[in-house]
Length: 116
Image (cartoon, rainbow, N blue to C red; front, top):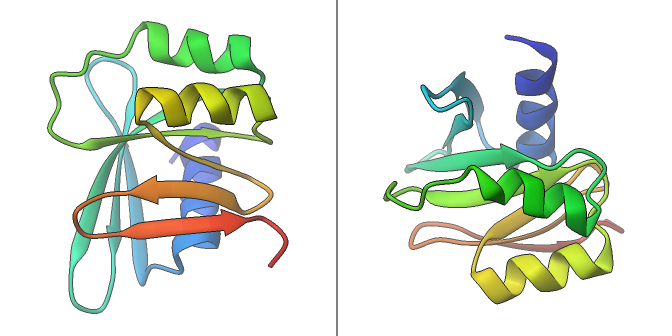
């Protein structure tokens, strides 16, 4: 697992408390994450947005193809308020290394402000 995959796994572990987390590189250069819980598994299409500024988020989303049936989650070191607004408006889930997150799928809802 490379450094970026480790960072992604740590953010997902922090926000979901999943039993196991696997992160693999996809053929398009993005990442696919699988979070296993006691009773089910959730898969994500993951994009890394660096520091979390709106330009970083736009850059991450620019190469993203929406053909996947997986929920897209954008991760960053710390999401800026403008980035959160952009992601909420486009319907993408997000999380950052502070523990803040908003992810809604048919099998998982995570809403955290990062203070807990």
